[in-house]
Image (tube, rainbow, N blue to C red):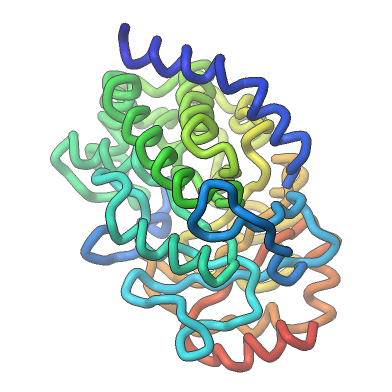
Length: 351
């Protein structure tokens, strides 16, 4: 039986269980969407109940959009989350600073997820396996960075097309299974594939078609759900997205609307600083992103270009800004674990 057939058979058996859990638990090329540099390149914490499988006790999964904005912290790969000495206590979620890249799930991911779960927070993981494996397979680790002559932007779609079934999907399924084993019934958010649209751009020698783009992403989403039923996916949205650069999209909505929203619960932005604003960031306002996607928004405001750290962005630590952000459809805001972390924590305690 081929890997693809095996995966499909596995998923069919899980459809009913996953659907039941979902009903109980709704929950550009750009120079900026790289994994942070490194060697492996709201409601308060939900109530706990017993974990029949052992390990960390499970959290009650929150709905995808709470009655207030939830805050998280985004440590660098070199930082640990160990409040109060390291990191704010009053956040709801913590980013695993090491992205899932071509090596897949590693002992570092395991350790950090265990630490986050032990602190009764939601782990937030970046899934970059498809793109990282493509770079490795092409022998050039450079991002496109607006340069259509880079191998990723010329040959990337062909590599993905040839390796999705036998290499990329098994790596995602393995990572999701290991995350699921750690998480049990705890929610884990997985932010998927920054700049995925680059594989459908006209610069590619053979761009992904509409059906390929949707189909490949939905297979990744299904692998995640199969391996980790408590995981929820976040679709990366690049505000610098321009449909006229793609081979087939007519709008941002048309690019993303075929993705499986039974698994996909949020849309997220990352790759540079995203301060509070009601105006446009590149080509879209935050409210426009929510409207295009039909999903609540995750703001990742813990990094700048290339994944470098920034200080806590205090533009979000304002009650008026929070009220306006909630009205825009923003559900999560993640800030840095550098700078005035104590002030960040105090604001959360008071709000």
